[in-house]
Image (cartoon, rainbow, N blue to C red; front, side, top):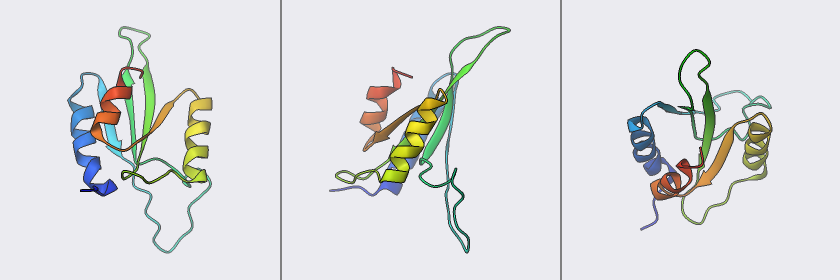
Length: 108
């Protein structure tokens, strides 16, 4: 059975937010009677930050996941957003499952 993208958000967010030093949330880009601004177009489904160090100069790694149902592809705007995010120091992935998230999470 092919799952819908919306079926994947909760298990991914639950898994991420159980990890120590991680805060992740669903990014909702709803268009209701208005156009998306350039920074909103293509924005990913899940955003978060992972603590990378501790102490006075602690910092975190920003991450983003564009969730796609199996067999679906990210559009040009979504890929561009992730590229611009990476240019600013974030890491972003296109994922089709919780297993995909788990596999790439060690790179974050």
